Image (cartoon, rainbow, N blue to C red; front, side):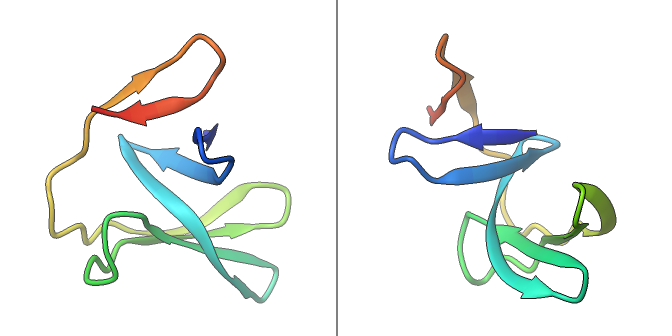
Length: 76
């Protein structure tokens, strides 16, 4: 699921964690966890939004988000 934050940035949300589009890789993009640079969790998403790889190595708890009526999410 792609979410739009109040600051206008797009994040990808999977299993309650958010990811930002980090860099281009062959055939798609690497999305890295938004928590910190020390978190090793990331996704590889191919063109067409097909999940190619999921590395679930979060070193932190799942954050809590609240969905707003306009489709944006805020961290609580």
